[in-house]
Image (cartoon, rainbow over all chains, first blue to last red; front, side, top):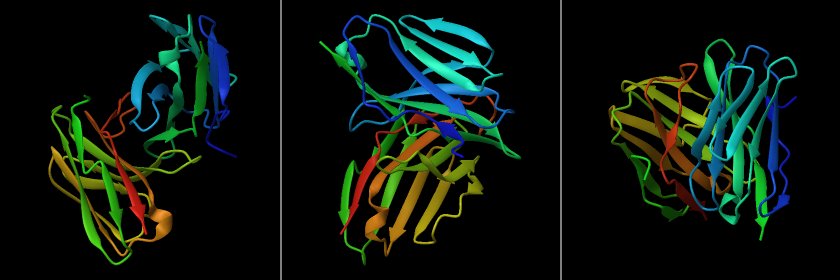
Length: 112
Length: 115
């Protein structure tokens, strides 16, 4: 079983719509959750992090965490072409010592 | 600009060459990392240094040799690589090493091709 699982996509969303990206994880002891955005040919950039159950909003981005169901999601409202990128989910898993585990990423394309 | 600088951006090398990747961070962080990113695979942690001491080595082949002379600089020395080592190599830093809430800041990466 993959430790952090994401749908690789591509996920195509019309401009102005809501893009929804999902991530599931296997370690129930995970405590912190991160979303990184990676443009093609560039390095990952942290855009959101969440530690507690519920929603966390930052501008057009909302991270949602449900520890009971072991999933974390990222919503992007009013999607723009500049949001087209690969989104990496990362989970801090406690396998004896803290370790940040990444998913394979979801490729998002915003269609003008 | 994340405050983490990597050189070179691109590197092509033969299997018998020796080369080094360089990383420098200007953020005052205490931890530095090497990650490998291959197509359709998750980011793979290779090495972690905390205050210049290596704290994790994820069973990386000995043809990859890290060096951390101080908390701002990190090198990855490469020798007798294989074609399957072709990938994007990313350096990252964080305030501390893998504390629960630590956030990683990545360099721009070195795209390595082994012929």
